[in-house]
Image (cartoon, rainbow, N blue to C red; front, top):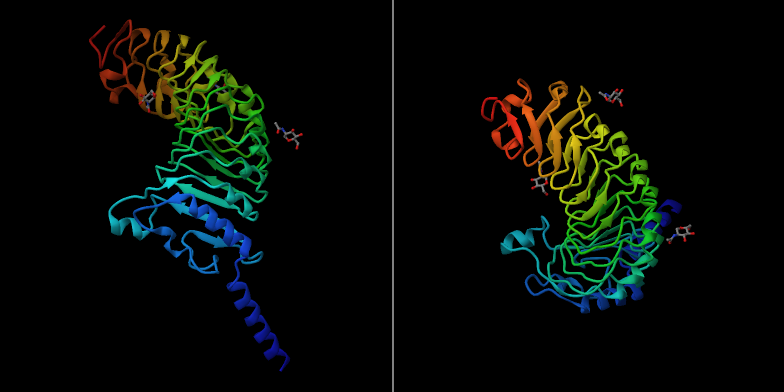
Length: 363
Ligand SMILES: *[C@@H]1O[C@H](CO)[C@@H](O)[C@H](O)[C@H]1NC(C)=O
Ligand SMILES: *[C@@H]1O[C@H](CO)[C@@H](O)[C@H](O)[C@H]1NC(C)=O
Ligand SMILES: *[C@@H]1O[C@H](CO)[C@@H](O)[C@H](O)[C@H]1NC(C)=O
């Protein structure tokens, strides 16, 4: 009998939990919905009735707290609604600050809707449980909320492919859980915060295609989990910190399309880096003769710089060199024979001062 009552009580608790949606969460969701317009799929059609935790497209509640924990709205997802319609999502309107009343939110994904304008609500930085903020592929403008560093649990910050302006706020270095930072293709200017190296959990830092200037802080090399650093197509200047070549797991380093000066640090050629793009900068001096068994490059692009001297012989001692581009420099002398040069085409070597030998004309 006791067991029976217990099971009934459990069932009742389960049903109660299942049917819950705090009225304040429901009101916040409806205010959020009211600021958006989605003409093609009517995804918000399901946002009716009292129970926002069940059947509301893209809304998920925490089973324990019974509050809204996730908003997951992707305009280019695997969801069959997009396949059936043979088109991707499109949405206009803006992200209402009402979203900040969902105080238990741990994930906000409002991605690839192409037409959402307005700013990132500044109140987002007061959502203490937020782990994922993914707003890629909209038309958001304005600045990154200045207090974003308060989000101590944030692991993913992705606002790529928008029209964000302003600087990276200094507080960003306080995002102590951040693993994935993607700010690519915006209009962010200013310098990289000097204490960026405090982001010890960071494994991908993608800042490409902005207007970021100033020097690369060498503190970046303290981020020992960093495997992918993409600072390409900005206005960065000054020398390349040699310490980047000493990082334990850095595999991709893209600094192409900046204003980097100074010489090419030897450390980069004998490191864990396997994709190195330094193309279109103003690097001078020789290519250091330090390739060795640790050098394993799927791609190394040094084109469009001011490198001079000869191609180092040690490059034949690299474990692997897939793609190599040394074109548009001031290199001179004979192209070494043998691996990896036997599979490279002339375009890897053209527009230098006086390189010769296969695959160019004989010396
Ligand atoms: C970063 O966090 C520390 C400690 O909580 C705080 O004192 C500091 O003001 C924060 N920095 C910024 C720029 O917000
Ligand atoms: C390196 O960057 C340049 C300029 O941004 C780009 O054109 C080139 O394709 C890149 N090289 C490789 C190997 O990806
Ligand atoms: C390459 O790096 C290793 C380990 O950091 C070091 O021991 C070695 O001397 C370096 N080789 C050259 C040619 O600089």
